[in-house]
Length: 254
Image (tube, rainbow, N blue to C red; front, side):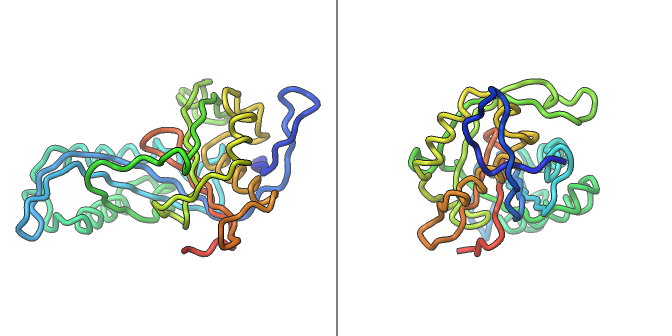
């Protein structure tokens, strides 16, 4: 499997990207599933929009560049839709607190996800209410297209398609607190990625995992780091409900 490239330079031939060794670190993906439910927690009505975030981690990716295919998490969503969505959780769960919901879903996922996804299951957490959006200083959005080779016949990602990508820099692995996006990275994405066919920009299957590693390596290769001198972790989101993050080795959680 080709290595993600942490560098991007002007190419003498259009569509001929350069390669450099990939950074070493940990890949994490997250899937958000929202549902509406009624519940009582410690005698108080806490009916609300509930969002579940399931995360999986890996040191090495499966082809074409996944922690696991997000399609492998379809059963997780189906379970939430069937058992929890638009239900009175007081009648469904013994513990309806955020922790209780998370524990129920973690146990379910560990028992029912496919082998590859189950082996990489990291955590399940629960968030309530509408989730805040990253502001412009702490994110950059760009639209581009890609396709992925080596997928099973009929897989929708094998067709050329587009995404509105969102790139952020978590302050620590898995953290919701974001760091400001350096101007150099903003310029790279605006000039080298926006409106492009990403298969012709990076010499690797342009999954979110590979793109996150590429951008983390690109930042490190230019000596760009956070205020404590730590290499940036990078999160790339293709959709509102999915993201992939690369955390370079040596990044100590804040």
